[in-house]
Length: 105
Image 1: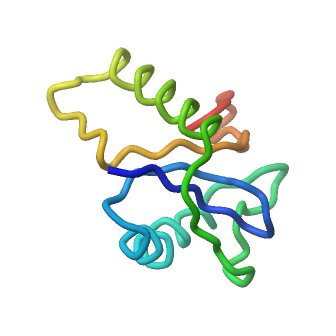
Image 2: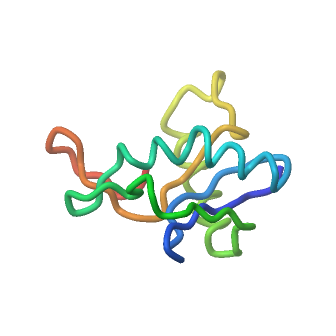
């Protein structure tokens, strides 16, 4: 699997694994993009549904953040059902839901 980054207006938002660029673009358009509208930063959706989503290969720093997030998720959850091929890491701080503090998803 290769790691890819989704950008909106040149701003990296999320890193995720996929088999190919074409598969990553399809996943971004059909699944991840709409989900980005549910996450907010400073009261605004991460994606407005209008601005083009850009998918590119993740850089070294983004890949390291994905690796770190994956390790944390494995250590805090039930790793028996954990699938790293479907794991994604937000690269921005999102607003907390229900008053909880969140750094990354």
